Amino acid sequence: MNAMAGALILGLETSCDETAAAVVEAGRRILSNVVLSQVPVHQLYGGVVPELASREHLRGVVPIVRQALERAGRPLAQMDAVAVTCGPGLAGALLVGIAYAKALAGAAGIPLLGVNHLEGHLHAVLLEERSQGRPDPSFPAVALVVSGGHTQLMRLERHGEHDFRYRLLGHTRDDAAGEAYDKVAKLLGLGYPGGPLLDQLSIHGNPEAVRFGRIHLKGNPLDFSFSGLKTAVLRHVQAAGLESGIATRRRAVAELGRAPSLHEWGLLCEPATLDLIASFQAAVVADLAQRTFAAVEQLTAAGDPPASLFLTGGVAANRALRRRLQAEADRRGLGLFAPALALCTDNAAMIAAAAYPRFCRGERAGAALAASPQLALDAAP
Amino acid sequence: MLTLALETTTPHGSIALLRDDSVAAVAPLEPGQYATSLFTLTQQMLADAGLELAQIGLFAAAQGPGSFTGVRVGLAAVKGWTEALGAPAAGISTLRAVASARAGARLAALDAGRGEVYFGVFPEGEEGLEEFARFEQRAAAAPPGTAVTPDPKLQAALADHLQLVPPLLAPAVGLLALADWRAGLAVDALGLDARYLGRRWGP
Image 1 (cartoon, chains in turn orange, yellow):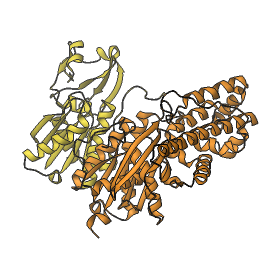
Image 2 (cartoon, rainbow over the protein chains, first blue to last red; image 1 turned 30 degrees about the horizontal axis):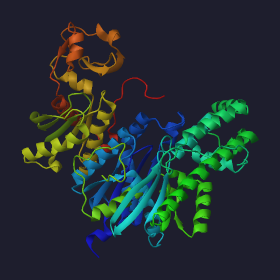
Image 3 (tube, rainbow over the protein chains, first blue to last red; image 1 turned 120 degrees about the vertical axis):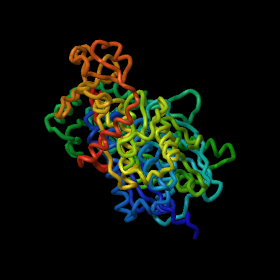
Image 4 (cartoon, rainbow over the protein chains, first blue to last red; image 1 turned 180 degrees about the vertical axis):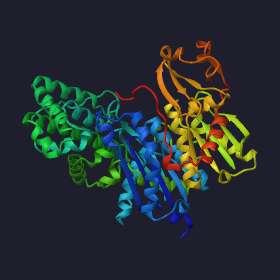
């Protein structure tokens, strides 16, 4: 066993609204995975406020990294490298993590690696399999990365133990799927974040009650667009006269002075709103599934059939989406791989895991590592 | 005692190395590149002095008011260094650094953009008072001879009241940090936070 096989990497993630740190051994064993969520800070605004997120990262980064090292039972001196998300994400938020990681690694005399956040989400899939003692999925793979900030279809190939290559197949032209959930939740007078709440409320409504047309786009059929769906929800609210229910919910939240529980939200939603929620969720899930399998078909037709399917990112926690992709993947005899919740949503274990192959290949980031808010995955850091 | 001081909060950011109370080196940061140049210049400054980062006894950073992102970059760097080395840190008000740049100065002003100013009043022997205000509201508040700014544009606009001090504030940050450290006011990485003055950031 060489020294790299047991390499301990401290991962740090501050690209959006979670301050996260983790220690992962050799890209396969999670020694700690700590996430400080800023949801209570942004809840008041119904979405992430970038300036506030950056402020919270600056306050949270020291205690979160300390906690990750403590839970791992390993001091900083035993780390072999520090890996930090360098993009894509909010510029000011990324900068806090990068400056901290750079200084920490520099002073500890260990290498620093910059990691693409999306590469992290992809490696969360491998990390999940490995940490469960299962073999790696087969390559090439098609991956749907879907979260509050991203909606992308990627093709992954592997050229050796530590050599992964990525190709973007399609991406959202406007809102990310998770963002659409948040915006629809906000316009319906529901809480933030919208995804988990709408997912849970949707089972109480009729998904066929409101017919949203299929989302048509010119150009790349593997691109996404969710802003039109959001507008369609708004139009339905007006046409069906659902405004009074929204006003009632907003008043109830104000009177309650806290976020209602799931049960309370259920009581605050009239049947027509629950139907709308279920129909919205069905439309999003259908669109994500349709384009994901269109990608599979496109590659197959080109003589390059994928050997597995990855589902990752915060929206991968959505139960309806998982069920839908699982059923369709089973029908096609394609293995579907999706991480558990803690590795789907933003976390630093995936950053440490994604850094490991790069670490093994000798990649190092210097003092010049910068935040790249628009960083693309095929242009690796 | 070696002190490494960062000033990343103004448009004329700088770093400085202090040997006890004397300034051994100063370097301006590259405009628009603070997050990278502060690290490359620190490496270079230490190498030129034949020093290692681990020999630094105190890390100092201007903690604002100023550019929100700049404030955080400097503080995050000092947090990282001090956390890894177990060294003490000191966060210094940028306004206090401006006021300390000239003996007898009691008022410091910094351009906050959009016709607004950060003002700091530091009566002798008293705790300072810092605020964010409209430019016009504070224009006459500066008593002649005791008010300073490093911003040429602000000085030109308030020429009767403000005197110009040199723009590179890292040496002043380092000296004030040293004074704080001697007074037992240094903190660790956890205790360091920004000073945000100013308009609301929320939607």
